[in-house]
Amino acid sequence: MSFQLHSTVHQVLFGLLAAIGISHTAQADGDKRMVPLLPKYKQECAACHVAYPPGMLPAPSWKRVMTNLPQHYGTDASLDPAAVNELGTWLNANAGTYKRVREEPPQDRITRSAWFIRKHDEVSAATWKLPAVKSAANCAACHTRADKGDFDDDNIRIPK
Amino acid sequence: MNLSLSCKPPLRALLVAAGLACAAFLPAAYAATPAEMLAGYTAQAGAPAVPARGQQLFTSRHGGEWSCASCHGAVPTRTEKHASTGKSIAPLAPGFSPERFTDVAKTEKWFRRNCNDVMKRECSAAEKADVLSWLMTLKP
Image 1: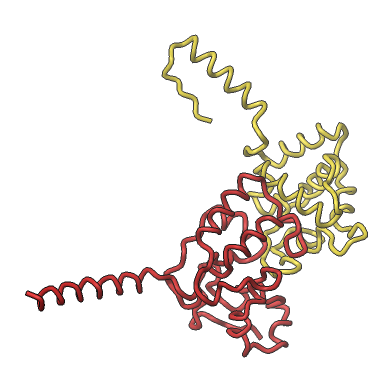
Image 2: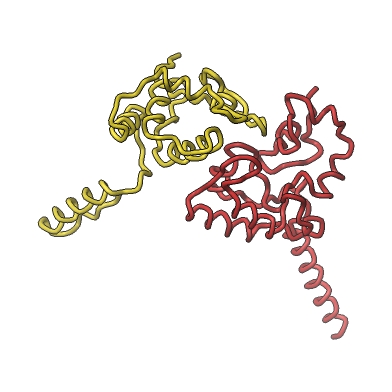
């Protein structure tokens, strides 16, 4: 009887563990289980740059970004209040909570996060300056599937 | 706009009239053609648009760092790149990108933002009319 119980308990625990493992959206790179992007987010927030996965910044960073849209990294990205509200709510709900993303990076820039710098430490200064790249914020220059939220190593092509 | 037309005739007429009246006061979030939008701007401006003035406004840096042309190109008939992010920007001229200037809310939003970026203020209706009239002269 106790043997049976253990077996069931173990089965349940194993199942739970597997379920948690599958549902836990860990890193943003190489993680095919992307948070699906809100259509409005793609529409409003990917006109000038790639649609950054919300999991790449912690909630307080996103909050500051949404509060300061008229001064958005050197440009006016202002939106109507309803849109700010809707996007802010979604960003807050899908912000990064994984350990490395808990850091609020300087100026709330993804590219100044410690994890980003570490991930890109093999990219030469010259590469960043290439006209085809221009800026670390231009993910799609090398990450060929950045628009799909896929930053897998397999899909990188660094321009010359 | 969805009108329920299952009511009795007199009520229906009233609803239609009310709906039309409301439409007149709808926020500018509806579809249009570039020509209709130009007509709207010139009406607001109270004067005809001058394409040459529009081109000048578009290509000048107005004492700042950027001009409209910095991102859209001096003759915005090709896919260009954002000056900072490198993101590709479809041609602005409606003759080359049919979806341009067909959504009033979208156009107004971008005028607000980008005039602020370039000129540190909103563009007047006359300026918008000038720019749009010039863009409409650009044909394939």
